[in-house]
Image (tube, rainbow, N blue to C red):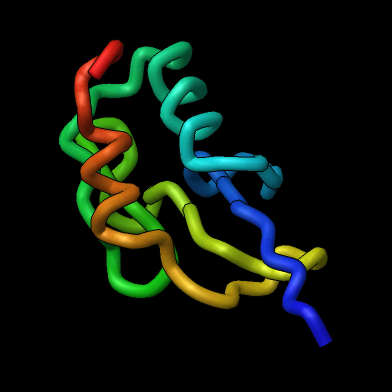
Length: 87
């Protein structure tokens, strides 16, 4: 059976889970929201930065159709998100 992975995102504690097609879409969203860079990995399935830290972090991972985690995003993806716009 082929695994059907989706990229899931939840911005902090009060948001809903939304799925995205690519890490490029996530980067564009973060730029539109003017979130500061310097994202770093959280234990398990998330990232944190200045605005989203501690227990109010950003959930960001590959999951199934029901938003159940399959695997975290890679360090390479976090580096890509941290690149300045246009790089």
